[in-house]
Amino acid sequence: MQEFIAIDFETANPKRVSACALGYAKVRNCEIIETNGFLIKPVGGHAPFQSKIHGIKEEHTFDKPHFGELFPIIKEIFKYPLVAHSLFDKQVLNALSDHFDLGLSFEYIDSSAVAKDKLPNLKNCKLTTLVKHFGFPAFKHHDATEDSIACARIFLKLINDEREGPLKSISDEASEFKGIVMGILADDEVNYKEAYELLYWLEDHAEIAKKYKNLYMRTKEVLEDDHLDNVEAIEMKYILNNLLKNL
Image 1: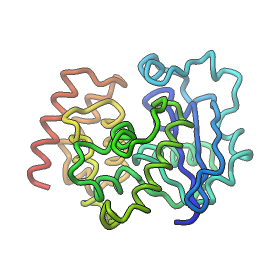
Image 2: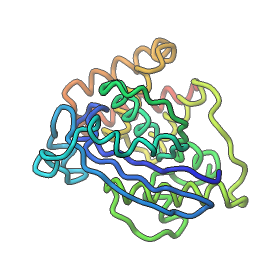
Image 3: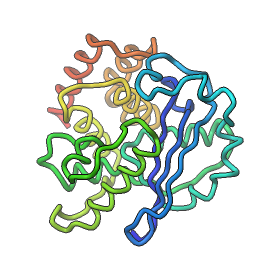
Image 4: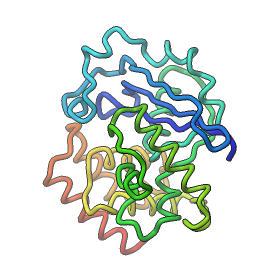
């Protein structure tokens, strides 16, 4: 792939439409040629739990444009193939497109799925793990621009280093679902972002949600208060481990 843009969103509350930051790194001929980041006034305001993760609060975004206002400035980004390190950013972008009636259509690659295929023996394929695995410089995790740069470097390494094995793709919903579950369980814990990513994916894939109705309903229930406590996280891990045995 000669040219692509790695992106990363941070959200202000558990709703996927609540983007409060966007970072990107543009790649051409295997080199990062441009990076930038934007703060965004989020839909639905800021929740304390999310602010603790990335440090972005209302005081940082109250005078910033909402995504609909920012879009005309950055719309060229979405004409390139997009790479992000999970399906979460795709879900955020789709939610923003729907909310602001942008009609976005884009090519999207989940670099974490690529890493899982090419590095099956790695303990997990989280962004921080892969940065250490490849010996890249330390970065500020949950800073949207720095995350996008790390994602770009990782994806370049994965697609250009033949020693890491052949590039595979997830070709159907069942395989994609299994990949999500395996990714969540890779570090033997479930966090709120992973739980929401799972819930949003199930909401977008009705047949899978219907087939695994108990998982879908329980995930929805534990996230009703927009939080995932330790007991709920342990329960979700137990449910997913049992489900994975039959996938």
